[in-house]
Amino acid sequence: MSDKARAELAPTGVLRAGINLSNFLLVTGRSDKGEPVGVAPDMAKEIAGSLGVPVNYVPFKTPGELADQAGKNVWDVGLIGAEPQRAATIAFSAAYVEIEATYMVPAGSALKSIADVDKPGVRIAVSARSAYGLWLENNIRNATLVPVSGLDGAFNKFINDKCDALAGLRPGLLKDVEKVAGLKILDGQFTAVQQAVGTAKANGEGARYLAAFVEQAKRSGLVAKLIERHNVKGLSVAPLA
Image 1 (cartoon, rainbow, N blue to C red):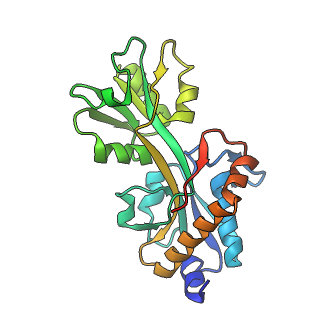
Image 2 (image 1 turned 90 degrees about the horizontal axis):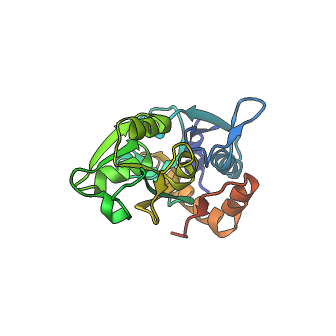
């Protein structure tokens, strides 16, 4: 590690880690001090340890709010899904974990497969500015996206407005499917959300250090150990870059 990488990633002598609180797979609780607990906070702590500095968590309610602060001296590293829109301002590592994203449909739906959803007239409720929502913005060609703030908001929109499908992470949809009789989760996935570690575009040395750290964390079994530590179902270690 170069002194320049450390200076870019911890300019205040502390690693300020932006954490997305809305991802229940990566943030599974709070400590007695109110700090976020889970795979993402632990990953940030491991990065800080490798730099030889303490970590300070900077929590955000949504990934979009976290991304908005890139390069504004609010956080030094951000742990969110790597999507092209965000990559305009954030230099991302390869993914350290992946999360399967799919659709849920109402009882009696004519939509039987992932391929059936992107058709004219189909309305898809989705949590606005989520990583999988951004993927859908880039890839849906015929269906209509109905973005709503927050996971609960998207579910309520899906039910109350009788949307044709709800996009979401499979582990979350497995909880939602129990809420209303007849709901069904489609087999397969439309994407796997790539959860990565990013830093401001200007931090070239820092970005290279993070990329190398993430690859070693996957190769050494560290990421698998963090998933096991927090007993998270629905997360898988991303392939080596």
